[in-house]
Structures are given as structure tokens and as C-alpha cells.
Image: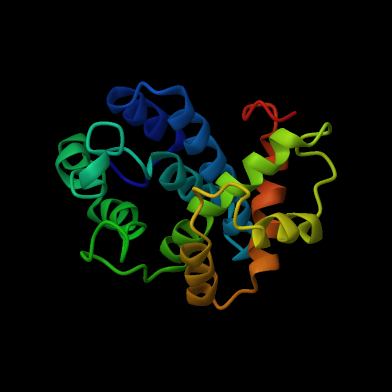
Length: 190
């Protein structure tokens, strides 16, 4: 099939997912991945590829919440999704739901880092009158430190992801915010 496109990712996720919040999460992670791709100096085609991987990363979650990342291959292989892309998607569950593949590439490490972090950004945006507009890393860090805020988002996994990237938490937060600001309307956070 060649490189996974955003259009193809949307089509595939829609086939396996129905819950609205999962599409919002897919969009948020996709947006953050686009910003991470820019951080790593990727060109437009590569950026879309990172966005597509981000969009499709939870393809097996709705059907297999207790076996997340264990059914990605059987869902995507018949669709002609490349082995490397399937591996990248599976890797975001490393040490959480699967031991199959450790994140190795910048794209895989980015996906691991931003997955949970987008949830904190989203929760913070929802309580701000101006939503995503003018969100500062400093304020987001305060929310991050408050364990009761967006308690479902695992801080330890986020920090592990940042460490793996060799990036500061604030730097990754900056990318998440920028990416999600660029797609604020689609996320209902405009």
C-alpha cells in the first residue's frame, strides 16, 4: 500500500470504532504527532504519515479494551498496512499492554509520549474559557503536577516517553499544544 495516509487511517478507524470519544482522541494524537514530526524536521509527506499513525493507534481498543495492541496486526495486515506501520502502532503499548515491541524510531517514541499527554491537554482546554487558544506550557505543567487533575492519564508513562525521546516534558507539551491548537476546531476546542 505504501505509506499510510491520513485518509486511509480515517477509513480504517471508522471500520473498527464507533465511540465518539475515541475519534476525538484519535484526532488529538494525530494533531500532536504532526507537531512532533515538525519538531524532528520531517517533510510534509512524512508529517502526514506520523499523523496517520497517530490517528490509527487505537484501532483495536474499542473491540478489545482488555487486549489492547494484541489485535492490531490481524486487523491491519489484510488491509495492506505495512509491517513497519503495524509495529509502530503496537509499540505504543510497550510495558503497558504488550511487551512485543519497544518504541525504537522517533515516530514510535513520539507516539508513546503524546498518547496520554493529549488527554491532559484536552481536559485542561475543556475547563478554560478560551479552550486551546493561548494555552501556556507553564500552566499545563501545573495541571500535570496535580495528580487529581485528569487522573486517568498516566504521568509515569508520559515521563517515560519523554525520557525515551531525550526531550524535556515541557518541550513535548509545547508540541502537543501547538499541534492541538492547529486542529482546535476539529477537536471541538476552538
